[in-house]
Image (cartoon, rainbow, N blue to C red; front, side, top):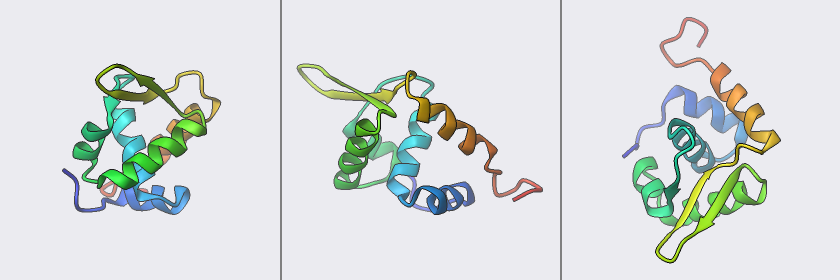
Length: 103
């Protein structure tokens, strides 16, 4: 569970305006196309459920995430057909880590 905000999250927050959105995107990018459900995302990002639900809805409405409902859970994954996803992933990749010489 994350509680401390790292330098990359700070920079992305300035760009995207939502720490919850940043953490969800970073988590799902690390999953390499795997699906995750709300409580799993909540647990892995250290966020409370309301911001997770709100940002999952926002990212799904933007087409960045895909939503898949099963009888037991609703799963979310990155939408490989999203034109925004490639751009976001490229931006995230270019933001240096805190211990990087360009940070």
